[in-house]
Amino acid sequence: MAGLARLTEHYNAKYGAADFKSVTPVPLVKHPKDRRQLAVSVASRQPGGRYLEIGAGDGGTILPLVDLYDELVGTDLSSVRTREMQLLFQHNPRVQILQNNLEVEGLPFGMNQFDTVAMIDVIEHLVDPIGALIEIHRVLKPNGRLIVHTPNIAKWTRRVRLLAGYFPSTASYQEGLICHDGKTPTDLHDEGHLHYFTFRSLRRLAVERAGFTRVVPCGYGKPVLCKVWPELFSELSVILYK
Figure (tube, rainbow, N blue to C red):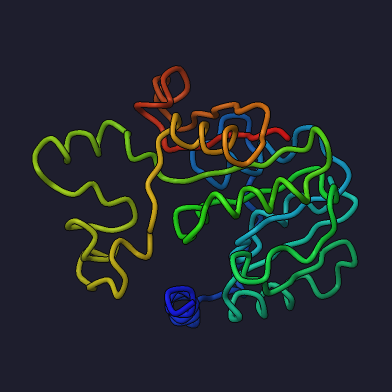
């Protein structure tokens, strides 16, 4: 519990100075070039029903989906981000925003409630990713899908770093000690990333431990190799089907 409280403190401080007034919808594009574009692209396929995003951040990935789903729910661990998203969507009756700690409280929904769930850059921060996937599996409808994005520890750039004897950090520089601005020390090692995954490890975890029946990898990025060989050239994005 102390570790979870420390993570909550970290994210409230990190996002306390964020400018939520300038939030814009993530564009829906044919060829996604980053993780948020990919999440929106996948979520826009087979629209309708209920959508849940865990760790919805600034709400930018929910905005382009508002007219595609009957009901949308966004959750976040941070009280700062929850409050700002509530203001962002206060006039939209289709959207509900909740502060929720998945690992402490579980999800406040019954079984078989959602058609699509998204969890973008969240699973690597969880203390118990297996338990979280089991809980998400519970609230998904039969044949529902979970969109997951997380850094790929087996990406070629990280393999080279590891080969050279350096820790292949996934959210910061200088082996997890310096923030992305290149000068500020991190207050949590590698910005709070606790677990590291490959396509294979996440697939086995989802199927063998959490009960998902099918896993579809989704490579993204500008080079063609990101799509044809995502295990080596792309970050890790998958669709998990119940």
